[in-house]
Length: 518
Ligand SMILES: *[C@@H]1O[C@H](CO)[C@@H](O)[C@H](O)[C@H]1NC(C)=O
Ligand SMILES: *[C@@H]1O[C@H](CO)[C@@H](O)[C@H](O)[C@H]1NC(C)=O
Image 1 (cartoon, rainbow, N blue to C red):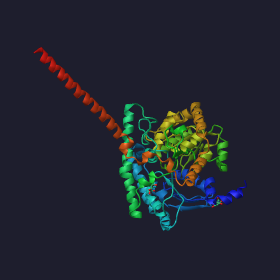
Image 2 (image 1 turned 90 degrees about the vertical axis):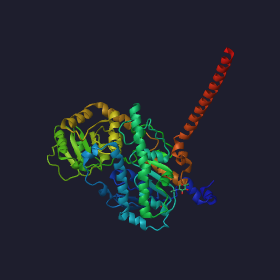
Image 3 (image 1 turned 180 degrees about the vertical axis):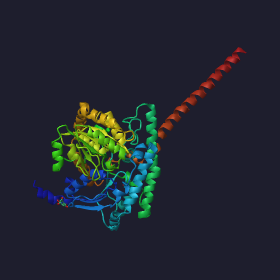
Image 4 (image 1 turned 120 degrees about the vertical axis):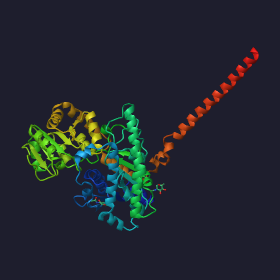
């Protein structure tokens, strides 16, 4: 049978839908104001564009070069707005409750700021007649932009999340997150062990969920009302209508968890095949006979803003090491820089970690950097500052992939001993190699999987059939409180009936005994 004949008989649209080649018009609202989120989000957008879809990206960072099929709308200034001067020592010290409200306030204020940018105004000026075939949103952070989804009309939604899978995004897609064995994203242990940790985990989990539902989401709704007027459905409704959620999660490092089929793990999506290094860095790494330590604190924490005395401690420690040090240093110069230290304001982290002479990665242990270290099997000395960085380094240490440095109590000896331990003890690299092999062993590369599921949602115009029934249940039903109440109630009723009957019978017997005795 000739294919042209099929083409004549079957309407073209159906063929295109079947093989999934219909080019879609996609609006991707990716507002989280950090470079690392942007680095994680972008590969999927580029892949979709290269497959013929048109993608309008709304984000804080412009693409480095214009890309065909992509309209780039930049929320100018939002990166700088939220990354102002920070006091790293006090950041490290805050307690869990402060952490909860800090994360909430950061998301709210950055979303509000992003809405005031010219980028947001550009999107505001799109007419109501503009339509999209698909929305891509971040599972957390950009909720105040959901007014646009209402403005441009309904279309299926794919949510993505670059910083792991905290409790509220699991809840919104219907994935179980039982605090008996899954640790709240605000706590640092791997798994809760013992009664006390389970109590603590349950309380923190509940506090996070309470704050999310009764403070965070209503505040986002209020922002939407202010900018888009009344009549926009609550943020919660949009989040519960998400067809598929793509998360930065990989079981090899993040641990086994129950995921509903609509929750697709695509950890490592941002890791590309290494590109050739700039010449000076290539030579520097090639010539290091004792190996190189790569030092980078990521895109939020700046190493040139550490306190003077701590910078000094690192310099003194590095001067005593045989290894070379490649340091992502954001200023022009570093007074007292030892001979074996090379600085770079911007360093291609993934390509550097791929170099065989890299012995150690001194990192802030953010999730994306941690995934890169695992991918390239480079052991880590982690110095965490904020949010999930603390959790990640605890996990790294417990899996024997590296050691933790505490910024507050840092000493030169501490720095030297951790660095030497991780470089000299082969167990760290062996563990890294094992986990790295697991991390890389996937049925398909994570980016391919992400593209597949995004187009799946396009092909089926949503994924209602994947939607967990729990999303429509009130909390008391989800927790089976009504069932427990009825069952416990029945037991109580039965016991009471038995007791009453026994009492009546006993009394009757006693009475007849008394009568006989008389
Ligand atoms: C842009 O999309 C068209 C189809 O809409 C496709 O043919 C073309 O290859 C895309 N361009 C690029 C550079 O990917
Ligand atoms: C969510 O989905 C339901 C059922 O398809 C629909 O009635 C409702 O309008 C949707 N709400 C939003 C905000 O997308």
